[in-house]
Length: 253
Image (cartoon, rainbow, N blue to C red; front, side, top):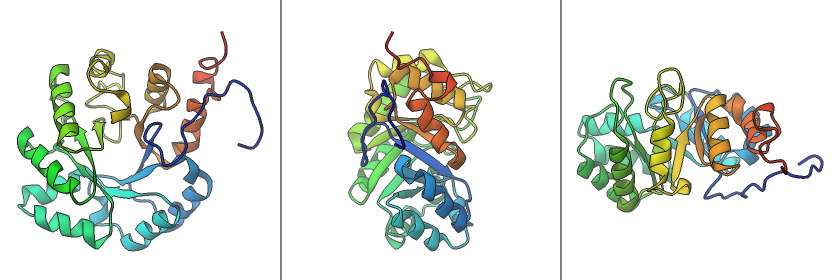
């Protein structure tokens, strides 16, 4: 930090197991990646190339190399995994991970109907090759999954070998964990937390109000994801009580 302030919450150090910030890259240029890392690398734990953007991204290898040079692991969005699976190309997907020397992969079923046992089998298989993140929740805003099922799926996928489970929200924060207005489904989150430890979950929270809500509920070292590149440093100030929304949250009462 550039100077000293008292009553700042402790932040975990990289490589973190909690307090993770997962950033979504929806098509940054190579120069934008370099600019982002120049100011935010210390606060980025992992980057997701959103949904299947890696399929159409020019200079993909150079982009991956730039993140790697900055010490930031990258993975392809879960929709790409689903696109391979629905075309019966799972083994091609595994070869793709090797081709680009990726150390992480996301297993999801947000766009594709998938039997939970089959999803867990994909997790088990990929966990022998890479570190797996699995995403729970649908991208269809009309599909409401009851809390007991969120809990059951999260537990099964962690047991199958997922490093973290991701709570679905899409890049807009208007499905899954949230209502179409962006409001948190508070009862859902609180019920999940009675059964699944917070450190095992990455909560997709692209909107500032959502980030504030999770920091107030779970503290500075909550795992959040789908953070836009220009929101990385603002999020860190929210975590530290240095933005109006959390200004008094960490001060001695």
